[in-house]
Every structure is written in structure tokens, then in C-alpha cells.
Length: 262
Image (cartoon, rainbow, N blue to C red; front, side, top):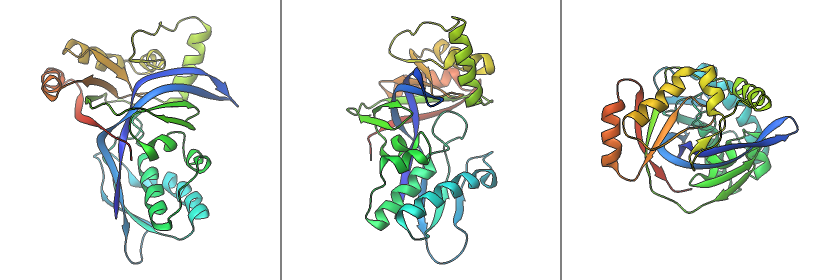
């Protein structure tokens, strides 16, 4: 028994306010074919067995996050399963990489127990988890607790990965400061991200990645999450390949395609 969770990419992200000190959002997201996966392990041994990890990923630093999620899932479902994990989604890039394996574990545990987790449990595991658990094209609002499924749209997606990260808390804090100072740019078109300008100030390479994709011929370019990954959307794999050939080298570029929900 094995389950996959695809990376989350933003088509748009609007910051709408605050609730109990946390920013609220209204965003359109979709799932792509860059995936983490988990399967149940047999016998006794370590709770988490790493079968494959992305280059540069440190399982020891990530396992405390999984342990906290495991404790909540065990309280809800009971039992003590072991998991074999594979990690391909970069962490700290705005792609849901910190939530994907948690969603995998929750989905496997639900299959075994025959019980579905409620939205409150999923949200307690992370703001991205309610969406990551369902996947597909969706509108996500509030603090991540409201997930409205939208019709699936097949797209080709090129993900550019700057060689830097963006601190999420710092990006939101800078957003607040820029908003108060009237320094935020106006939203343009349907592909936008209110956190892009703050992210570029914190990590200029994010802006260079977006410029590189546009210079290579991409039209629909948007940063995902609070960065640092920047995505371009295409109608055909041929168009993606042309842009990738021009942009490759300046940044790591990962081709992918959108996936329907679970």
C-alpha cells in the first residue's frame, strides 16, 4: 500500500487580512507531478525509514516535524504504523514540501483504519495539509482550512528553483511593512502573488528567476507560496521544452504537469 502527494503550486495568492494574529489568504492552487510518497513498512524497527531523499535534504532535521504529526495522528486513529518514505519535493521553496509526507501518512492511516480525518485534525498538522490531503485544482481561503475543489485543468508547469530560500515569517512581516508604507505593487492579471515583492527584497534571486523565465518566453509566471520557487504554466509540453532550454543553467528547472485530486 503506497500513496503519493504532489507538490502544491500557486496560480495566485492574495493576502486578505489577519485572524488571531495569523495572515489569511485567498489563493488558487494546483497539484503537480513532483511528488513525495509513503508506504507502510512491515515488522519492527524505526518509525520512519528513508528509501529515497532529494539531494541536500536532511532527514534528521525533518523528523521532529513528522514526529509531531505522528503523535496527533496516533491520537486520532490509534495504532503505531511504520512508514517507508521517499522525498522528491524540495523543502522551504513554497511547494508544500513540509506538508506532503504528513499528508501521505494521514492518507495511509485513514486507509488502514477506515476512518477519515476531519478538517480540524488536518489543519492542526499544518496550514497546507487540508489542501495537500485532497490535492487537485482548488481555491483555498482563510488560514488554509477552507478548500473548494475546482474543475481540473491540464497544464504543463516549469518550476525554477533559486539557490536560496525565503524565510516565511520574514516575508509576511515585510509584507505588512510594505503595505503600511504603500509600497506594494498592484496585482496584474490572474497570475499574481502578494508575497512576491517582499520575497524579492529578502532574496533578489527570486526576482531574477521570474525575469529569466519571462525572458525565455514564458507568459504566465508566478512565485509559489512565500517562495523561493517560481513557476511558469504552459498549454503544451513543446512550449515548456522551448522555455526550459533557454532558462536552464541559470536556475534548476523541474518540468511537471498538473494532477487531479485524490
